[in-house]
Length: 366
Image (cartoon, rainbow, N blue to C red; front, side, top):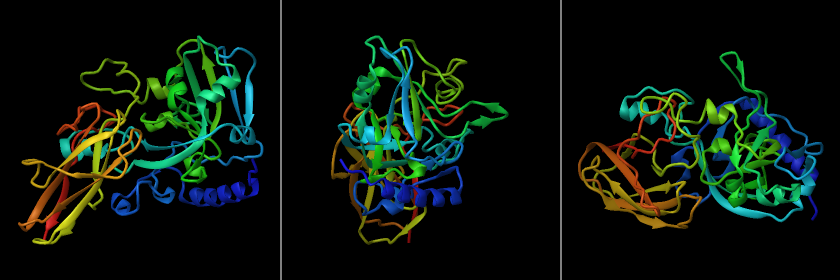
């Protein structure tokens, strides 16, 4: 297999300069920009979340090292061409921040939460190409009694309130790793951009985005459970109703729906409009979607279009002819193949994780 390393470096360096110019932090996908663009989120529209900034990594010297007592022998190191020459798969899957929809706790439920103030745009669907993590583990000599992995990124250490938590790392059960996790080098048919994890990242389908470690540098493999701040201090549910140590570490994402329409959009009375949107769930494919145009008083089935698959969203359409001028509220609620339907509200936790309630979408009929 011939790999254009010069092209990869030029591509990565060009995007890196742009991302560094923007600075680190977070920016969201704009939902109205997704109308009519197809199933995948274009890379330039895909949300970005960086705890500490985008590292500059030289693909020629980069390596991935697996180590720990969960291997049968010494540490094993893979370089970039070795990984790319291994058997690969392309999987369409959503990637979503655990805090997606966090601002809705305040705007819809009048509850104070902490964390990045995401609307509903910390979500995207891409085609991810890489080698199954199971193959990498097998080649490294995975022991039968290994139970946990600890993938770690090459980004700078995360410091909050004077506490140095070290580089991003989060335990991943071996059972999940062997099931469907990918070691990824391409996104939507092109090398990963630096902001999205160049040269190599993990994609952990259906799970909270923090599990899909970017800028992957090493993986500890262990015969005993592993821990990091990202599954003890962060990415658990805390607050009333939860024990002092919080819930179990977060894994699958709940079912959600979103309109491809700007909040506050103005629609003409008496003219038919085609409402469009997308629904997704970490529990499985979407079975059905219902729409309310009267603030939840009545619900009508929407028409599902495109793929109806696990790991990705389903698109839907709903023709509507508004008849009354003034403010109105649109609502969409999905049901996945496990039978879970979006509730009208989301159970509170003080970090605003896992919003799962129906979103109230305000518009005006003119």
